Length: 313
Length: 326
Image (cartoon, rainbow over the protein chains, first blue to last red):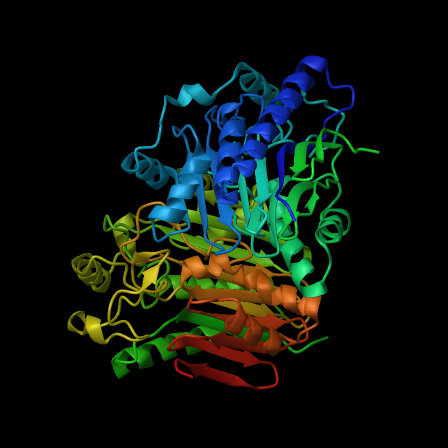
């Protein structure tokens, strides 16, 4: 079997008539970043290195809700979180409340590898980043004009918003657009798996709010069966322990990756809340979602590749 | 209608040399908390209310590592965390990095009931606490002399101490085979979180709930979050069961321990005790931990793979047990 990789830029209520100037840069970014991941896998980098590398690219891209381009809290600030997990060892690292670190996913990896802990947050995470010499910048670096606008609209609508590509449509019920989060999962030819997720969270979230992304088993998970990164309505993903459940269904009910992921997304998670990407130890890849769309891309060593937003076929 | 059942814990991993007097104190507290829960259940209280009530009692008492009596961070301060989950509907609430909230589990409940989110931490959580008007104290209210002493020991040993109640001269003799510092994530630290507290309940309507609360690891880095506030790791409840875990936080997170019990019941059809035994045996790898659990059919169970777990359980049929060792 060969390697496989999938990445996402968020699931949500992405309308099919999204203007080209909002759609094209994201598609182009997905295509470019997929290629970066593919090259790394072809160069025999470990899946753990590959998912970190890919998520760093997604964080640096201002079009996605992670790193630069993160959505804003109710206070107009950015609080980022990320999580990385290695399937073979089940070692993991997570961070929350990151405000100056350019690449939260790399900080999460340092937590995993350089501390006896799994999860560091807020001031403690920031202090650790400095101890580790990671790149930090002014907090304003992460804030984009689009996100300032989104926050303004969310406050006007007095609602917590997940979609960061569209202005809020007043007639759409709560949970209208559920974009957010970036992630990557990868498996090499030997069945080693890794998953990574990173996000700015919910538009207009309360300061200190933690979502599903850094919670192992909710937004991110990897073991010897599969690697999963989820996106959507954080509170629902936490409750449904989405990422862990896909792996659990594979292990305990003997389902294959696609079936297991489809079961969780279609039968378990409430409609309109969840999307995920997954790869299995046998090189399968899946990208199901129960929202209108999910920015995503995947490729397998045999030459298959796909970049998409809405349901294909 | 089902018989109610309740279990409480005060932490997994106990020094076999723990002075008898302290063992008795712990058992008395566990008994008192069980009885509190039992009275509430007899008055038909809902599971979610009972777990909150009982954990509040455990937090308020300085004996265990939660609320007052919490383990100290490397800076000598207290940072508390907690989570609570209501089986029907699986609503949940969690908090981390609390420094002034007298009862973290109650703030976690407010996050669940009164905020649009599931988890709030650090200054955001403290801000929410102010808005909600919960009881708050200065950080030093939570700090006990015992813990100040233990932090010193931990720093001298330059490691994170798993049981902060061991006598200062007895570090080498503390339980669980610690002769040289245990390695975790490749780095030398001691074993798991000491004396996290928790409670799981199934009420007479068959509704399950779970809650867990802790000060975390002695000498932990500021900002370190353990398993207790993480839904699926330290705490979980669904229609089928309620689970609260304690022990090596990092292993519990990696093993998504609390969710695991429910998952094997759901996906493998195991009964409660079988599920608990399976998870403790197969899902901890080299980690050491314990857990308590109840099922919607009125069963109560616990399991641990380390030396001792402070626990108590009771069910409507009159069964009651408080223990520390196997």
